[in-house]
Image: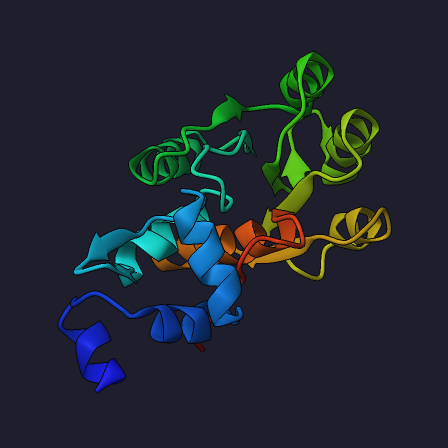
Length: 196
């Protein structure tokens, strides 16, 4: 019944949404009461749209867009990520070189950084250091077509990151947004399961 409801786009009950988000029923009910999670009242009961819950999670669980930086010397890849992320309500800042990225990192912090491993004027490790100096909690996603390149190992040695192999598409970007939304979320924020 719950699977049918999700498949047809019908609203989820508190119990079904709590199971999806791996939360207690009472916790989810209180989040809905306080307006901290997208929900609607139907006949005196809270109901949840699966799509709205996923969008909420992709936005970091707060409804506010995350600050995202895309660093890649490939203008087409920057344009693609700009398009995808903007459609997801999270327009990024863009940098085509390590120097540009370091300037942006000094000017402000970012919640999520898509970072090319090999740049014309440096490596991911150079940019990674600048990002971590500005914000040690920033989530970094290394993008590369060469996962065995020594620059990948150098960047990985600087701290935990995700690795995204080029070429990639919309579904991989969406996966990164879902995963990083959970990693960036405070402990009280619901966590959804990812599907393989």
